[in-house]
Amino acid sequence: MKKLAKAYLGLVLMFLYVPIFVLIVFSFNTTKSRSVMSGFTLDWYIKLFKNEMIISSLLNTLIVAVIASIAATILGTAAAVGINSMKKLPRTIVLNITNFPVINPEIVTGVSLMLLFVFFAARMNLEFGFATLVIAHITFDVPYVILNVMPKFRQMDPFLYEAAQDLGCGPVRAFFKVVLPEIMPGVVSGFLMAFTFSLDDFIISYFTCGSGMQTLPVTIYSMTRRKVSPEINALSTIIFVIVVIVLVIKNMIERKNTAKEGEVLG
Image 1 (cartoon, rainbow, N blue to C red):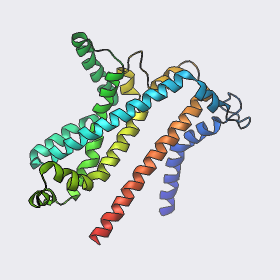
Image 2 (tube, rainbow, N blue to C red; image 1 turned 180 degrees about the horizontal axis):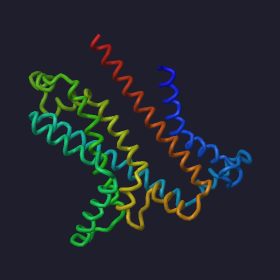
Image 3 (spheres, one colour; image 1 turned 30 degrees about the vertical axis):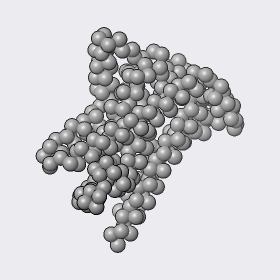
Image 4 (cartoon, rainbow, N blue to C red; image 1 turned 45 degrees about the vertical axis):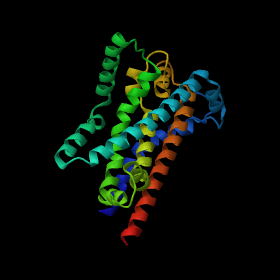
């Protein structure tokens, strides 16, 4: 039975990662062929970094991802603090509401945000571009930060904050000196998850970016509509490596925190 389970797991992993492996291999192909490996070259990576449109889109993506992730982390952490202080029934209701963007199809969120921005554009002279893109990314990033921070509040001693105040700390100082260090692993995990989702988002960005501000996934989509160039393979490989690095860092932080918690309980 164990062998069957391992074989099944192997097939699932192969189904998921073989296409990515093929993409990575052909990003080093000397020709544009997508079926025959003619030789090894780094020319497509060199051409990629000489492509001004792709570099501009990459910078846009990184800037939006960093700003949206930082803002979402601050808002999500503050929201988690407020939610944690609620009573059980209101807390459950609010948590369910904040989970809607996570389980809601992205196309619905994207169209909804587009219609909202169109509504404000007609009344406040709001143009689609950097501002709408950042707001949209913050909107779908915040729930992921809340999901990462809330478990840390459950693990923390509920009387720790009050004890710090009894010992002379003010409310603000008690939060930054006592509460924040306790929930910091969740805050960091939330930031990394928000950054990852913001980095590779396509659907919501497509509906809210406008014509003058494109992120990398939107640019890739517009390029693949014409013809798939090996530059796309090289770019996809770089994105895949970046996402894997972020996820590895996130898992390392979570394992380190789990080990510390085990030592404390032990």
